[in-house]
Image 1 (cartoon, rainbow, N blue to C red):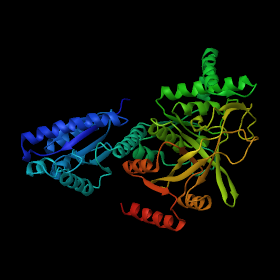
Image 2: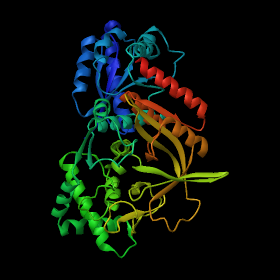
Image 3: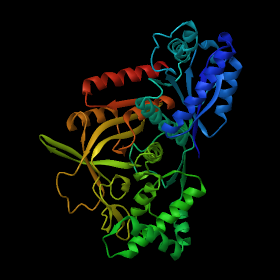
Image 4: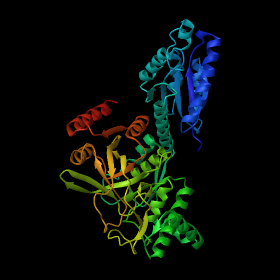
Length: 487
């Protein structure tokens, strides 16, 4: 999909044709120059002067699949009552850019003609009021339109809108059900589709096995070459790698045939399969698909969404699980990993394909998987949970580090990090908020972007930062509960 955004500028007839012609010319220039700086094109649509112009433009935006958000600005004063009908119909993400065409005030030249033309400080406040009055979710970005900081914030918001678009079209393929007796991987799929747009359905593992049986040796040869190009092969068990290729090809064919962007499976249901997909799942994630272990369809979908949001970065968003802690005083860390399925986009070096015994599940043979250490850097971990009647998005700031020790006998992909505000308080905050053991870890997507995503989707957002305390979080959660009950 070739995404774009629409630039809708507000004015009115009061100032005459000459002013409107100037506004139109400047708005067109701004859209063209901003498009050169932003990750997606900004298309100037109209200098809106009437209720009908605004409503017609927004109706058009709603039905244009390539338009995934609108950006508004008021060059002059634009009476906000004429925006009511249009904004009340808007179904796309909405950003209000509070800027002005000129950088500074020309002290020697300023007169009333200049003031009548350059009324953004005046017009943007009028425009802002009506969105507040309508209780509309929106992003407000203030600053000079040629400023790099404005470009960065607009670009980040655009990437959020990509995530929203992906979410609204999300289909998740579940192979079997979730792991038995696990609570956090459950959830209301109907409510999730109403709120987030996800279609979450189940396909039989037996159907996957049938698709695997159709995969040809030539197809496996071709994918094996891809593995050789991207990974170091550190095993003599070539058949195990080829079996993973067979699984990957079959899973991808099934997902693509149903337009699914994410999938989940469980080691408790491998009917007719020799190995749990490890390398297969990891390589599929490197291609942009989302994955969730143990039937966790929520983290599968969020992985695909956050990968799409970070596409213009390094693509480093991945399914993750908190596995164990290092609790030595003054050196507290989390170790994140999974049995097999962590995306190689997180790797600090070229991943290795290895084959080892997996002492859990129904594997007949040892699965091949990618083994690596995660890269260093600031990141977040995100968990979407179903609170019963509403969704909560829990986000925690972390700092990923080079593993502080060698772990030669741990044959999995792993990432080590410091949680904010510190490990112990961070764990208490995470548990207090109900965050799951499955997360999406991302080096690309920021907490502000996830907050914007939650705002657009009208779901609760909880952010654990370096300044969060358990007491402050408990108060925040109480107020969130109260606010949701009053809505």
